[in-house]
Length: 396
Image (cartoon, rainbow, N blue to C red):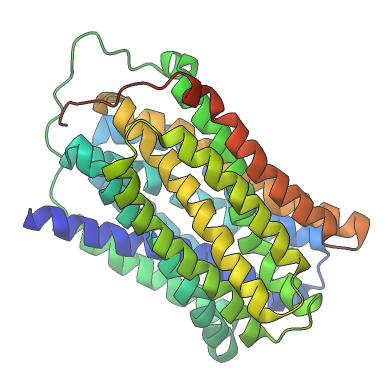
């Protein structure tokens, strides 16, 4: 039990670093835009290319987890993230280099979510997996609550280059701690009759529908992360400090929702997960639209808080559902496929928003785009609600 708690703590800290990297990027776009005189679509490429790499390497990362174990992939992911964050800050002297280093950072990120999911499935009984995974995912709330405040302070005192350099060193430290302190994976007991090929997984309706749903959920999740600070400063006239506080309220919503959803769904809503996802997705869409119509920082922060509460409830439930309904032997591969949908959403969102802003000279179309994505996330999951499956009862 003690080793499991230490493992969850270290994976949580590593997840926080991963999310802070993406949060700081949204604020760093402002000084990067000024330094290189970039257009919105060019800024979209810097953030979007990261998620393209993240998407491409999700499935290989899932295979590496099933083949070599989660511990090795966790360490490798954070070492790569740290190295290319350092390169982004220290060597990013042109748009081409910035895009290249963010692409390579995405390669490093790609192994982390599937590795954490594999670690949870390998060390926790089915009924405890939702809460254990929700603790890890709540790191997004920490990153988005503290991340904007850290980003504003760091950008003011260190600049965007120094900020990413420090982030890289921090990733190195967490990677070393995981390699030294996290226990080795238990030996897998392969069950007879379990089909583990990617072809079989791609035919599985659970995998396909969750792929589509998490793709749609991550469009507003990463779209807001990339563009909301710029929107609040340039369109609503807020200072960078005030915009940081508004974004931080969203992070607080993520944090609260992650832990509450993991406990509530794991304890009271077993078998009803698709309905939870559908209802929360619609409520999140409404709140995202209300962020756009808000005329003050207080109301924008309130609706952003609620929007992220419901968005994260959808995300946590989607992300933990395969842990209950799929065999442990294929978990790395399955989570790699499903999370590829999420990272593709992160790739599409900032680039699409950049083009929408350039074409319309307004953020109206972008918020319509984000709200509709959440509606589609809820609709995509409805086939699983019509014919629910009993959760797995085995212990990995």
